[in-house]
Image (cartoon, rainbow, N blue to C red; front, side):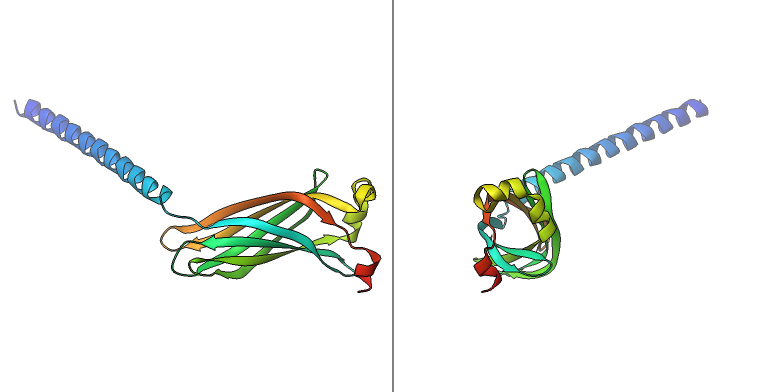
Length: 175
């Protein structure tokens, strides 16, 4: 009789333990769903590329400047952790880079962020067919802003722009 009672006690304790574990798992899933819904409703900073234009020529290459407008919906400035960029032309990547710690976004405002993109002369020469047609480069610029949101953590804001960049002329070299 004692052995049967112990067996029932162990089985009952195991069933209660499994029930508690399942209950806690369901509760954790409900909390995750609730938090995910709340985070989805949080306003996020937004970005758009306003302009990509020629900036300067040096011995190393040509520098272009992407001007990106980034809006901050929060009443406090937000730090930009880094900006990564990739410039592609004719299906090839012609420039990549990372700009660490480029500054902060103004509170409750749009901030114009300038992203310098450097392209080596040798790469420009390899794009000869595209350049020879109209003295410009058809491009696709991909940017990723990593912004630190308080409580939530780092978020990524991807931005993409396609267009044409005019190449520098002789007057640009000697201006």
